[in-house]
Image (cartoon, rainbow, N blue to C red):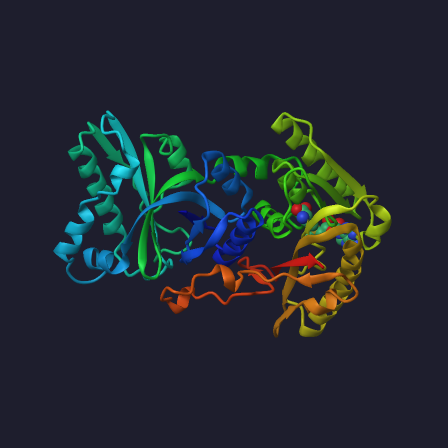
Length: 447
Ligand SMILES: C[S@@+](CC[C@H](N)C(=O)[O-])C[C@H]1O[C@@H](n2cnc3c(N)ncnc32)[C@H](O)[C@@H]1O
């Protein structure tokens, strides 16, 4: 068995829920051994090859880096060696300074030149127990000294150390994907080391793959048709596909496909995509986007776009689908917070729409098939208004799928209250700063 470190997206609970589902669907996970708001340490039932690791990372909407765990330290030792206040403990430093674990990464000592860098991820981003800057500099320096002592001629390291742009009190000491790519840090003998803190431990891992931020940016910004008002983020689309359990070679349906973001993500993963939308203009945009993607990928892509009202999905579709993933119509575009009565009315209309569509979907989806969908959370002048899930499931064959299942979480470790997970959740929020309509993600299973 091998442990892997997954660097989670900003919405760590959503990323973790997606990750567990994805790995469970492929029978790879034993359990989540440990976690923080930045990392999940996953015990797998097999050692993965490079191809599998790349496939896993690229299929997940909420995983930025993936590494294999090399060694673990008790966090108390690190806190003693690099305290935020007070003097460092010399014997703790000596223990860490040895860096014997580097021999697992650099087995061959005859390298002329090695470039590396430590990326540090605290348990939570504010008020870490350890002096993150000193720790990151210290560890880089010790690794360098060890490599030189082992006979490697030249060793140099990279550090990114800047306050976070959005939150100046937060130190950011992790290398960016473009730095890693520019300096070839994933190409042996170079390496990136992930230093991830949890409640009680420090895990050091060797990065195997990182999120390709340039490619994603290019695909996001260069596609011909985007609508700021309706387009869903590609990352959320990936998460929805994983909630739905969509697999390469199978067919996924997006009954509110809009500009085709989710369809494009599906196509990139080798999943056949069918999109339905009532609006002919956005459908035309989705078509342009997919043709553009097809040219970009340099291959023919398998998709179908249908103009229609998804409340009549049973009459529109002539074949069963393996999974359904979508961001539905989320109500009228709001310029300002509505009053509570208006928000309730919007929720009522949407409840009816979703229920009608789900009744149809429960007929066109194969048995045990899943749905991944978003629901709106509307902020009124008074309150937050959400959809009652039991009402949208009335008259359907769906039951709600539980996210972050208890059975997958290791409860043997002490847990700081700031990272405790309430398991078995029926919905998880996806909040975006400044938006009047927020989202929640749910997973439904056809029984
Ligand atoms: C939030 S948008 C989906 C955005 C899409 N995921 C994207 O990235 O562009 C909702 C879409 O649902 C469509 N729509 C609204 N009511 C519909 C219905 N009854 N049947 C089919 N499509 C509908 C709208 O035209 C709109 O494009």
